Image (cartoon, rainbow, N blue to C red):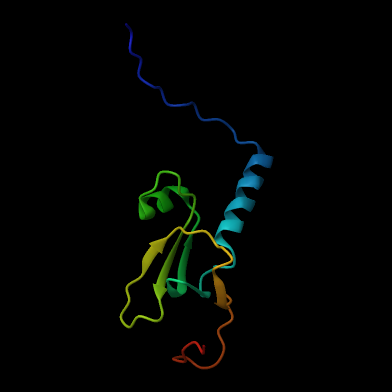
Length: 113
C-alpha cells in the first residue's frame, strides 16, 4: 500500500470573470458597511472602524480558513467597548443607522435613535 502526501497546487492565473464574480459576492456580503458606517442588528449597534479585504489578514483575524474579508467594529451601545473583528454577512436583519462618510453635526454628538 502506498500513501501519498498531498502536494500544493501550482499557482495559476485567475480568470478575470471569476475574479469579478467573487468581488460582487464579497460586496454583497459586506453590504453598506464601510469605515464610519453605523449599523444595527439583534446583537447591538456597531460602528465600522475598518474594512479588511485582504483574505490573508481576514483569515488571521477571524481564525477561519475561508474568510475573504473582515470588519473591525465597536459596539456603540456599550460604554468602554473594545473593537473586535466580525465576518458576518449583511442580511435583512441588519439596518444602516449612518452611512459611511455621513457624519453630521459637531464632534462628540452621538447617534440619535
